[in-house]
Image (cartoon, rainbow, N blue to C red; front, side):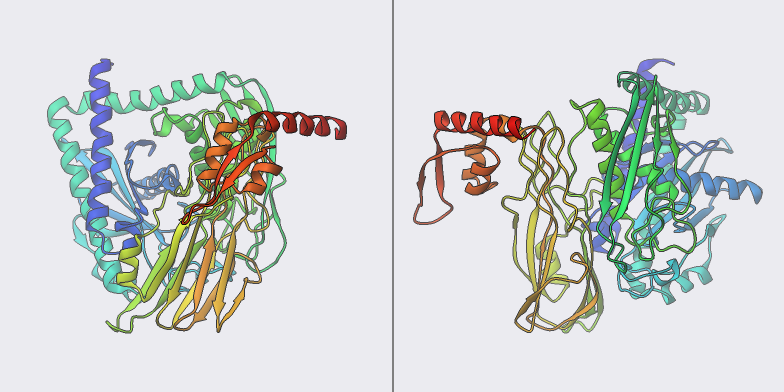
Length: 590
């Protein structure tokens, strides 16, 4: 394959997928897509269904599970005589595709010269999918049907003809029918963008050359991934972490992983992971695989995303665990075990390739869903706010501050737009001081926000990491855990499950306070550069107590300007002496 042609075709296909992302983000009605970017678009192989290219503006959570959805629909289509021009399939089946019911997928064939050339897919998060809780984030759900309507793989369009009855059924079963109908139209329209771009490529290069490019792109990614895996020392590397609870039973749930590296292949074994929970903190087999692929892409970011990236990786995933849910197990809180699957991958690989694997990130989506009837417009509304937080530190750098969740990358909706759409007022939105784990490289700080309602509403919170903080690696300390508080009738209180609260009625003037975790630290904090400790102190990323306790810093001077935070100067000679004493104390205790 001519490398120049291959590079141009790869770049063109990735650009087409990017354009599909932007088309959906710009055209969507609901802010969960237009503001949060909770969507994804991709191009897939017509025979195998493997990913060929995926847009860069959507969410990593859809990295692999869209491939599984496409492969499932390709199989169903073959049973019905194959794809026809103008067909568009729709589904949100958690167990056949992945994620949760709010993420609706459309799949459409692309024909060139009268033959099937590729398959396009788009995923968009619907602001409401019916079910027991507005927005679908129900911490008390005990079966999938309580979380919303289940859409099996069916044709929304058959040879260009819309199934009007199916659309009417969707609109009758969601709380935001106009918004959902608008988002669905936007999703359908991205196929026009994709078809136009691929048609231009076919006219330029011809079907035969492009087909060769598709196969070579997948093969190239496989070769590149195998080369990276072969550099990891052979062996088995283990890690364990926990979910706090499932929203109903207040017991921790283990997530256990053993990664075995043999030559250029990697095997993930989740034997010992907790059984499927009563509450919604579960995810399907396909989503677990996607979680591990997301983690691997964080460690090897330059490998192009396509089906070849995943070929060298195999799995042992026992049935009916929180990572392999089966019908009718609820999966509405799937992003929490997904975060834990990513973290245990980081923890295990930090033992094998410490130069590349980071400490745990903040590890919870911490979604707050607000709903009610707007007192001014009289319209029903649903607002969804996913956490930002701190990333784990690595050998390369400190952890990112106020980052989007690595498993989803969903943005926090803009404060101005939120206050315009919903009857709320943000009191603050700021870095959560002193929340990143101490280390040679410090974990990123989490985020703190507070909002007050000025009209009665329902609030649901679905998060985790309140009891089990994000871990550090190689001597780094854990970040601060999640903290959620309500202020109602003048009293401040914490939910019984700490980070989960189901349909709490708030009255005008009530307040929610949310504080996301910081990331774990990397390496011994006593080895951190003292200039970096002083900068962290004066930026208020860490407190004086943390600087003295964890970093062995001796403060030479503290000044308090008329306004602003205190300014500190560290005595480096005295700090080095204290650090030596602390090292000696550690050695004696060991």
